[in-house]
Length: 337
Image 1 (cartoon, rainbow, N blue to C red):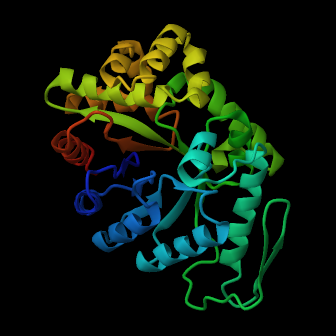
Image 2: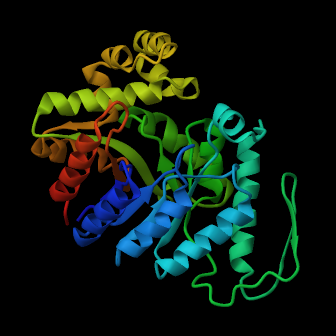
């Protein structure tokens, strides 16, 4: 039986807890939340931990650089304790504009190197819970906590996944991560021709192969009994992400330059309906799962040979709150194990 996960991008935290509980009862492998400038991923995941009993809980993603690695490490330990050992820490760098504009943090151009050091420091904190202290002298981080101890920590090592789109970060993920959190704009072609080869390069550095990684992706899943509604919502979400120039390599691989430039032009005035009009049906077919529940069940099969775990992700950009919740519930009902 294939593993299935769900992303908890709900209107409220109570909604998040409700969907997590339903997914837990329905046999989902894991539930994943994220964070943005208006929501803290670690705090909300604590609520999810309390609402679930069996399913793994995961950040998809938490920001790696906006928090110090020690805070991400101990936050993950807190969540692991709250969930009785069900935590997965998914980390991402965020874009340059997010780091600088949202949080006032300088963005390191050697981001992949910084991420590898960040991962090493987080794992050192986890491994030091028996009272060895934490001393770390790196290029980007220097930490000295002589009295660090956490005697009731559940694990020496919590699974750590990295988000990546660019070549350097993909290779870093292949080298040091337990898994990959794929971006919602990933297409099947991009995974096959760009993601996996670059993960493999990184994996070889560590003496392993890409098969040693748990490859997941936040897969836009737009589900409605009204097929046209599902397609509109999917196009909105694709347009939202395609407006970020850092991700243009995905669009370029397919020859979607015309669509890209149209989306960028209308993004200048934040005109989401016009941005969405530029998204073609073949873009939806390659990037998303969209349609009626039966159609989505069939479409998802196309992804099974490419990734280990689809994290089914309800569109939220330009979508009403009631539709967002309807979509979450349909995902749980359709893919219950």
